[in-house]
Image 1 (cartoon, rainbow, N blue to C red):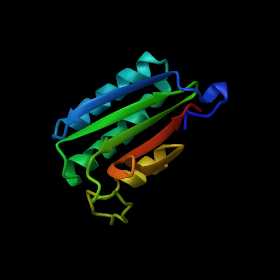
Image 2 (cartoon, rainbow, N blue to C red):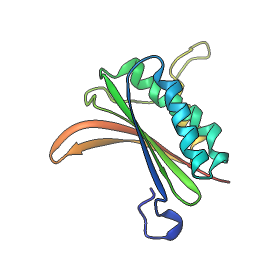
Image 3 (cartoon, helix red, strand yellow):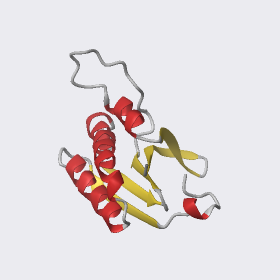
Image 4 (tube, rainbow, N blue to C red):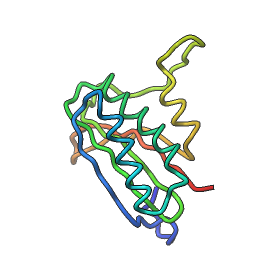
Length: 141
């Protein structure tokens, strides 16, 4: 991630959006990520970031049983790490094998294909599990 000591990996900016879980939240998340990447001079990452954040937020809207989520953008010199966090500790995302005619089930596979790295991290408050974060890293070519 961006916490390494090397100057190219030090965070230059961190942005966070807290939003309600609703059908309009994926669009809001796309706009938020676009603004953060434009503001930090990373326009080359915008298209892939919009697709990935839209899929991650849509997964929360459709599957997590929560009222709110957050989108976190950490920008470094030549890359960005974007995370979508929610408080549903019981339902964890997983990659599915979508059939040719399936309209659902491709989100995490798409995120994996567009990003340099991606994953799911559990969020803890001390010893208490309080949520999960789907994250992905995008790098400039």
